[in-house]
Amino acid sequence: MSSKVEEDPQKGPWRQGKSQPLANFLQPRKMMCGFCDYYFRQENLPGVTTARAVLEKRASLGIPEAKHHLEKWQPTRLYATTRLCAFCEQLFRPLPEPADED
Ligand SMILES: [Zn+2]
Image (tube, rainbow, N blue to C red; front, side, top):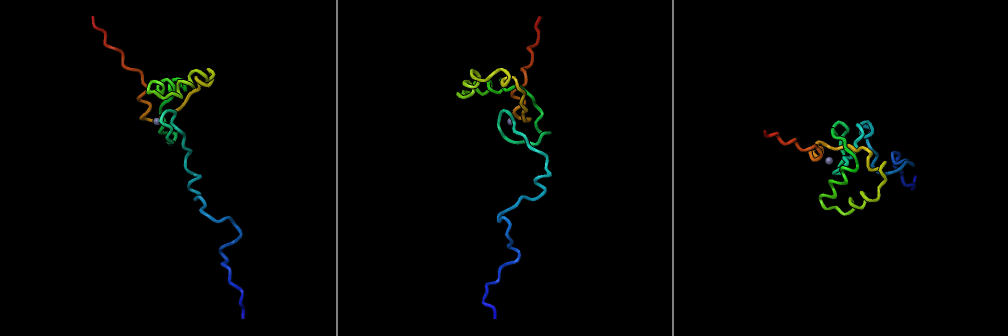
């Protein structure tokens, strides 16, 4: 007669908790949009601009820390490129040239 409590052989000494499925590691890496800070797959980040352009746009929207960064960041950091999502990219397109009127 055994009074020993049976242990679950599946329990094991390994770490408890959820492990990530392998598919999570095989998915393409997501990158952050430089303007809205959301993560997208690389093919959904079609835009490229400089950190300075992003900071100027944020400063024009009244974000105080953007003005601070514009004054304090080194030029090498300001002119580093950053990727933009499809939505934010349209905010950084140059305005169309006004039509010449003769
Ligand atoms: Zn974005």
